[in-house]
Length: 397
Image (cartoon, rainbow, N blue to C red):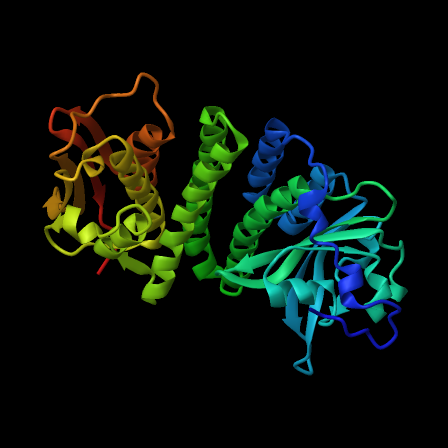
């Protein structure tokens, strides 16, 4: 517990930290339709490189939480190597502070160090610098902002008046928005780096734009399908979070390789680790080693997640005697190289086509082939489900 008082503060940290009240305060009912609409519009704006994505993020956070100020702060080093938080976005009454630097010893610093949500009342009574900030703080709610799995900043909302009093629904909303902020900021940083070399920028920007649009399409469909089929908020959160984690897992696998590509067998392990206790016993890979580029790995990783989840619930992996064979093939046709991935289930119940197509079938039959420039088929057979993808190889090892 932090009981020390700041140099000029009148209270201890524990006295301004009221995070525990998030769980005891009455929570309003989630407005999923308004939330989904706001995030969809935010994602559409993120695809426009001329738009400040973090400014849009802070405006959305302020609106959804009913706050009077909001923003995004990121930990950086100044010319002397000292760490400072730079307010990359500030909206509302604190908009004049956008672009300013704030000390490391601050509410943002506590959130980054703890890597957890913090709710504070009158932080200026502990943090010395807060006395010089316009519009006093009644309450401040901050959540971590992650890049590559590391907390490097915060997304925050401020109440300058007695209302609103933040509660756990605001915490949940900020957590969702922070995740999208991380995606947006990563894409923004990539565009900034690409601009340093004009010729190289043209080539890579086309690839980045294509990948970003595919990612936005997936996340939008993922969000709307998860929300439309969920009967409760908990079910929506669970399904949505699992699919977002699948996207992140594929990205991490590519990053960990250090080559910009990932082996299919590594991708399979990544996507089935949390679903199957020992995937090597029931999921077998046959055929030549296949390397996937970052864009293909991300979308095929999502496909493997949907196939594995479906199989564990309804297919071959729901039966101790069942299993999956993933066959790969590399071949040439009309002077071009192609790869094939065939997912084939056996030993489980017969596969039955659902009455209504969901996110999984849309992803497998439409989004994956569109993203990889290939073609795909999904068949419901007596021996189990099969999914077949054939796509061109583009400068892969």
